[in-house]
Image (tube, rainbow, N blue to C red):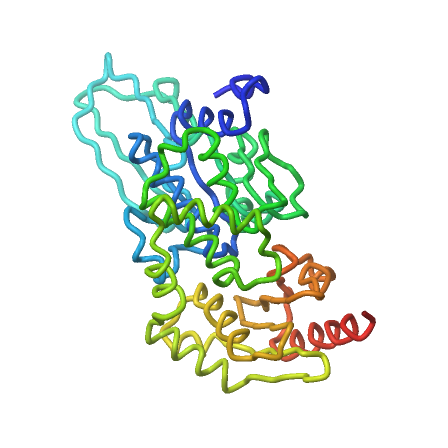
Length: 385
């Protein structure tokens, strides 16, 4: 699809839907640390276009969506890599030399393809290698402030992302506007909310009960059931509209907050055992090791549930931090309530997210070192203000 096809004569919603409808094969990509809202937004977009008989894949280096979203219908797989991205074709001139047998085998990391002729031989000039177009020609990037936030997918397929049409959907003030078309709304508290308004303006009749439930789930997850400080009348009006469309709020709350898997409960137990607090700074934090995840049988995406529980069970806390081991690095989620700003608290570590919650990564350090460094920095910032 040519960039000119996204004519600025079209409205923003028309640009979004036309880009996907005319794409050969669209792809949705999330950050390497997607929120529940990011997952739900992608699932909602795919659910809608499947009904319109348009196939869309979803990918993030973080892997599958959290188990808590299993109640959403028509969710489908989320890939941890980009499957079948580009086809390689080996062409052999067989007009004069016919093929009798074809076989292949692996030798270490090399694929060896063997062709036996019925008679005669092939020369190098008889063999040509061709690569097809990329499988995807349009990519919607959800919840990334810049291309690097796609993590391993971007590092592995940099050329691909610079060869296709990029649609950038985000609500973060730090977004760099890297897309060929950018769908940014700083009034929105979630990406689900942005997609709702695009769809509402484009064709409201497409919003059925199932799609409304998807979008409300994203908003509830992002705002902790509308209890976060960044909820606005604009957000509540959107939620009310989704209720009127048949969104199942009770079912969402049950699965996101009232139903926890055994593995998540085990992980929360291990986090609770290391819970620390600084009452003078209204700050609580905890840490999780690789062994904690292994013993609990929990995946990394269960960390968001630990953050939820941390803030819900620490009534006086305004700032909560969860650290965990991630390869050779340490990652952390910083959750902050007004008057504090999570983006400011995490700024020295290139924080990504919103003023309400951010993720940071400290490369090549140990859990204890990361804890002391970040917590002392937060204490100084809180004291200064």
